Amino acid sequence: METILVSACLVGESVRYNATALRPDRQWLGLLAVRCRLLPFCPEVAAGLPVPRACAEIVGGNGCDVLRERAVVRDNRGMDLSSVFRKAAAKALEVCGENGIRMAIMAENSPSCGRNRIYDGSFTGRRRAGMGVTAALLVAHGVKVFSQDQIEGLAARGDAGSI
Ligand code: SF4
Image (cartoon, rainbow, N blue to C red; front, side, top):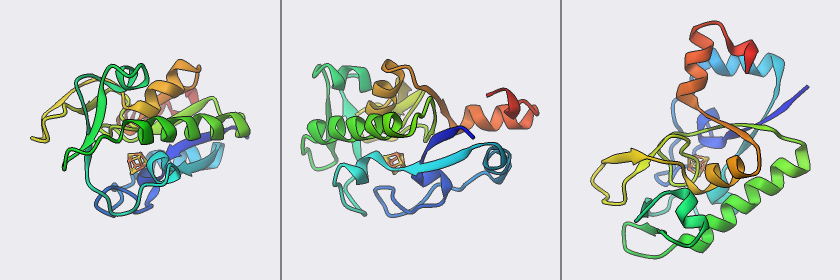
């Protein structure tokens, strides 16, 4: 049975910056849970960040840029968390390696887990195209990363078996 890494906040764990979880969509969760082993993982908590914590955004680029040290992750007090977020990504990659994981489902918009969109660094709620730091590192190492929105779409079309 294939193991899939999944953002812990997508499966009900209250690990987000504000100590909440995202509302899990039972349809895709149920479909995948019978076919795969879901391994919940929160990169930011694994890197030692507390719950709750200040919210953070990528400033000046996207997750790829943070990995190349061309952009930074700051919290809303201005603290530079870039090295912590790179450590978080490295831990996720390590877990994938240890468990033979080739696929991940990650929470859209997060500066760590965002697959297609992230907040734009202005702390105004605006978003931009791009990956979070962990998603970017996993993709760079050949892990297929999907957002929960993409998985919901597949499940709605009855295509979850194709992922
Ligand atoms: S780092 Fe990822 S798993 Fe952790 S709370 Fe943020 S989006 Fe969820």
